[in-house]
Length: 530
Image (cartoon, rainbow, N blue to C red):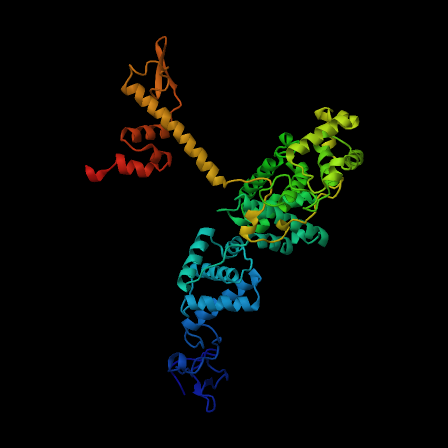
């Protein structure tokens, strides 16, 4: 009998060991005492498992060690990301193999590991020429575009890979097919939007509006414009949210698209009246003109309409029956136009030389002017007031006239980059960055001339007395009674830097480039020669 401690129930010191279990039992009340037969498990994690230890947890008594648990959690995270990105089983396996290769089988934990998973997923999809927008990966991983881009470059350098060029046309098709905002549209409208979007997108490629730009913002701008052409309620904010791009950037790309179409419209007879505000109403004729030009041979003017597959009566009739600018009833104008050109196309010149009948923009303008003179009704309605134009423009329907979209141009299909640049769409434009660089260089040349003139007036005042001397100094003091007030002259910090560089004999060609910090370090703050 154990007299060392009392029973936990009756507090009597009548504890004896049980012969079968070995537990201490009180002979007075019969209560079994707890924690009296504890036996230490010797052998560490390889020894027998405890009674209440959960299988799969890290620590003493677990079947997994730290490395195995880390690999398990990493593979689980990869599978979760692949499911959210919508990748197939084969692509998910490729991503797992790539992550294992990059980490040399160690995987990892921390904030960098999800970025690595997203970079490997992007590389796997781009290798197979599949569409996976980097913005979607960024939104899932929780980092910015630049951090993910750096990780992608590190993965490519480690694996010695080179990705194919980004296919922006495929991205447009992917967006139209995948996103739910276009699921409620009939298949005919989807096919129409897809061809129109491909046509405009490849025109933007030819106009260098996609060069050096984030591609998904350009895709969003084209989608919004094509949706408006097909009378769909597509908001640019909704499209930008679906594509995970900035709304401001999408608006900028959309404005650039409109400005390019306005430049193309200048070749039409009413091109001077087309602006960014009304280009959408003139877009059917502008795009039809672009489609016609793209189907002619590059560099030829006045290509015959018969060889490009267009009906001359329908094209010119559609052009001159624009109720947007001239307020003409579509049915009346169309009938008059068809009768007029049916009569004129039967002329002896047309019959005698059927293959040499050509038409240019100048000829089109002459035909339009002659048509206004010979049709009094159209001429009278074209001279109505602007208030009536605005009133009728509110009820304008893009599909009230004949079906303007043909879809017969090769630009409605996916072409190679060389083939795109061989097409003529009515406008040859240079990259916007190049245009801005030319304007900046011209502005700096003017500043250099003005700075040289100011230096000349200060260093040789007698020679430069003929000038007004208004730009000699930065500010002038004007006396007004007892007070003096300063009048600021339009000389900014750039003018002062240019003057300093000119005084240090820096070449004007180098100053025009605008690298002021480098030039100041080389010629002004040259500490090595001090």
